[in-house]
Image (cartoon, rainbow, N blue to C red; front, side, top):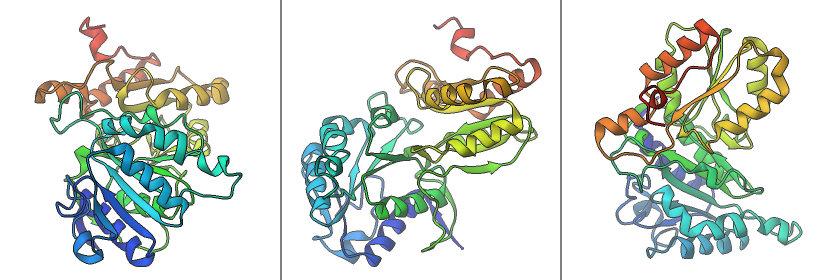
Length: 335
């Protein structure tokens, strides 16, 4: 079993799919000669050449639109958006064209393209380059959205996204790119889009997380009887897995990196409350970042992202009192 970095797992997934399928191509800003701004396309240009691995001008709308056209013409383009914020100038191509073209054509065309973007805080990139912004995409019928949380899921979900018949957004937590761990390069048994992972079984509480906060949740809940679920896919998310866990534990906590308002956790929480209201032993709640831009300073950025000690403190209070705890910013009078 190879030991690789998170970013290398993505490059290996791309290479393995490109070897298997000649229609897979990669393009974006600095993905070819520089091998990606975060080295997530390392070695691809050397192996597959400039026709299949292409640098593009600095125009996200242009190369995203080109990917839509290539996908409808029979190719399987994988594009890279350097920072999630840059998706903003290409949203028309993603949510109006890629996600809708199959329906507009009466099912005649499919759009098998992958939109990769680095997301999240923890790297000191400041407030304009550290957001998760999954809420831009999750309300778009026709578009699937996945978020890897470790080396294996980075590899598996990237390959699964390329194999999917429709457009898939892969949101890669930037803080994890340097993480190292074991990887199984496999053809079969990949994580399925739409399937959550139970990272640790338990009976006392259901904790649902995603991305870089999965590992933080696992660390935080050592010694606590908690079932920890990595949602993995935001659209479509695995309602059956979360429901089954809540039926067992009677409690639900969402741990998300996104700010509390408009984050993905609200959909999970609201639907699970409507389905399991009578079975809940206490009101569910969300552990999140505050409604504020991501700060640049290292200490403030670390405070902004829910850390293991804070997650543990919030959940311990909840389990001991059955009351929803007050978030740190309210405790400090920063509302």
